[in-house]
Amino acid sequence: MADSQKQDAKEEMILKIEKQIAAALWVQSIAQIIEAVLVLKLYLLKEESEGETKVALGVWTQTIGQIIETIGVTKQIGELDREILKEAQRISIIGDILQSAGAAIEVLGGKQILVEDDGFIP
Image 1 (cartoon, helix red, strand yellow):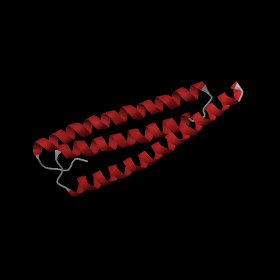
Image 2 (tube, rainbow, N blue to C red; image 1 turned 180 degrees about the vertical axis):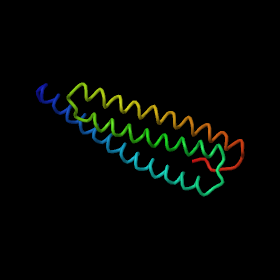
Image 3 (spheres, rainbow, N blue to C red; image 1 turned 90 degrees about the horizontal axis):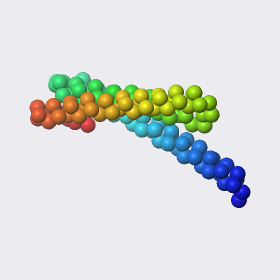
């Protein structure tokens, strides 16, 4: 196989894997949305505490971040325009930041629930 054919095959494989990653992120986003909706339902049914409020806020922040990251990753696939690619990468990073912030908020709420000794920590 010639070098250019090897390179083409490699680039095809990279594109295929990038598409699979994006598909996996969409599945993860859907699951995250389901979790956030269920946490909200549970929160609304219970006598909410400050810790539970933080957990619900953290889960929703992570969900928004997951969706934003997924959109950014999807926009990157096969993109040749460097400016559009950079913007899609920025979008992905913003999503990661929101997920991290949401996880931190959820941890604070979980710790508070643990101290209160009452509540469900997803």
